Image 1 (cartoon, rainbow, N blue to C red):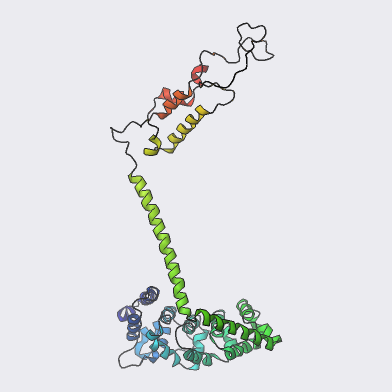
Image 2 (cartoon, one colour):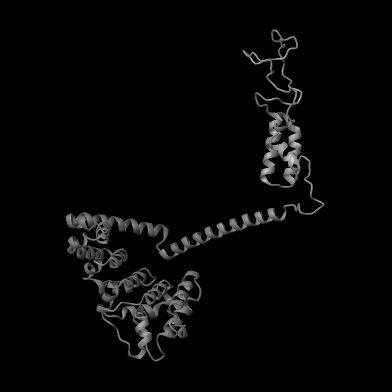
Length: 386
């Protein structure tokens, strides 16, 4: 890790720390390696956090480096600290001690930086003890109004409000009330004032206290009933999420396997021995053919069962026929078009009827058709009309 930092591969180091936290492996080794890379054996670990916050400047100057007032902090360095503070408490003790060793001005500068405030949020949400967290609260007290004016700082103020006790919560709301007029003009400030219920505290402080006391009592009862280890709850959510992803992956693999098996079991008609299509009734189920041919077969077979009105059918009808009376003036019984002077029958060339449906079905069952058979299949009336 030290060699990577010297080569300027800070992004690789940040990715390694994030991966160790996500996979929950090598967290102790990675935290110790980072601390050793940024401090020698003779130096104390109190300046580790400061050097990570200004990582690029420290790597460039090394022995001559000093804390820079008003300078922007390293984005990758802040990401490293966010990952580190998510480790278990026994792995991050040097980093917690280094953060608490900073002065009030340095903590205030961190809180006003867009990346530094996220480091403090990560620390407040870490597994560090409440006593150590209140040490940071004390250094920020009196500056919550200035911090809340920044969009990123408003999240830090909300985090401090959530993690603090009742008296400290009231002190935070009192500081925000002093800058309520300016803070309400900003979008993030309006949301913060509404969430902390600053307006009720301004109008009815006793009602605000009673409401907060009721919420804290309910929260304590909930923690006593279900436990207060928020980290274990987050771990449960992670496990459920990973289980759902594993389940989806297994379902996808199962579908892919079924599809692959279906493709492998598909018969090969390219061989000479299997060039003809089987004519048995189970041909469609045993040998899956193209969807177009199957659809045409089903349509033709179904058309045998159903009679279309106005067309002749080869299938004899078993319905009871009414006695047929020949038309007047026609002893042979041929029917004519009503009110027509012509002697042409309704069906021309009755002796040359259309091709039968069964014959068309046989044509559709062939794999290869000649040009004349294609014309006969698609246009069965051409021969009759010609």
